[in-house]
Image 1 (cartoon, helix red, strand yellow):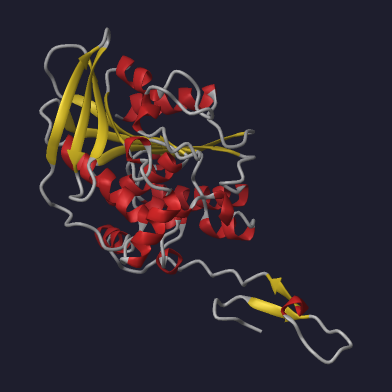
Image 2 (tube, one colour):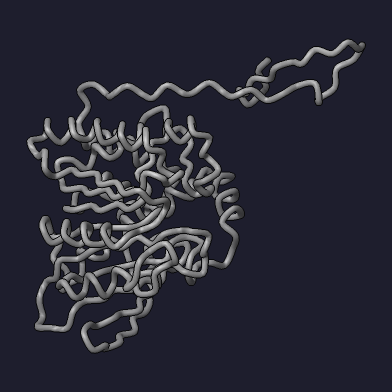
Length: 341
C-alpha cells in the first residue's frame, strides 16, 4: 500500500490476529519517467525554466561590491585575495590570479572547487588540491599557460564553513530557497564580476571543476552563454541512472533540486551548452556517475552537437578509475582549453 511519500509497502502475512509495523517491508519505488524533449521552445526559454527551478534568489542584477582586496606578488603571477558582496547576504571570499606581464585582457577560467566532505577547503583547492585531484593544482597549470583564474568559496566551504551543510540546506528549504540554487547564483555573479575587470577578456571565458565543481561547471555553462568552453571532471551524472543504481546517498544534500526531474534530464541541461565546446572526463568505476547514464548522455549530446553543426565540440572521455582525476585527464583538460579558448 502507498504511504504519504509515495513509497509502496508490501504486507507480510503471519498466522496471528494483529499487525505491527514490523510486518511491512519497503518495496522499491517506481522510477520516474524522464521528461520528453520540449517541443518548439527556444534555448533561452529553457534556460529561464532551469533558472526558475533554483528557488527564491536575490535579484539577478543587484550591484556587486568589492569589500576588500589584498594583492600578493609571486614569482610567476599576481594573486588577489578578494572579499566580494555577490548576494547581499554573505560575503564571498575569492582568489583571482593572473600571470605577470604587461597590462592586457587575459582569457579567464572560473574554477569551481569540489566537495569531498572537506569543508575547510574551498577556493584554496586551486593551489592546494584535495586528495582525489593530482598535483599541482589547476592554479599553477592555468597561469603557466597564460590564463587568469577566479575561484570562490561556496556556501559552507572554506572561509564560509561556519555552519554544517545540512543545517544550511534545511533552513534554506524552509524559506523557499534551494542550496544548489544559492551556490549557482554566486557562480553566475562571479562571472558578472569578472566581466567588469579591465584585465579579463569577456569574450574568452571558460569554466572547469571536479566532482561538485564539475556539476557547477555544467550548470553555469548551461545557464550563461558567456562561458565559451566547459570542462567537467567526474560528475556527469544521469539522474535516472543514479536512482536505478540506488546511488542517491552518494551525492550530498546540496545536489538536489525540487522538481528538477519533471522538467529536465541531465542530458537536457547539458544540451543548453551546445554548440559551445564541452569536454567531460569520467571514471567508468565511479559510483557517482553510473556508466549506463554516461553512455546515455553521450549518445544524446552527440545528436545535439551534430544537429548544431559542431560535432567535434562535444567529447566524453572515460577511464578505468573511480572518483578521481588522473594525469591523462589533466592532460586532456588543459589541451581542450588550449584548443578552444
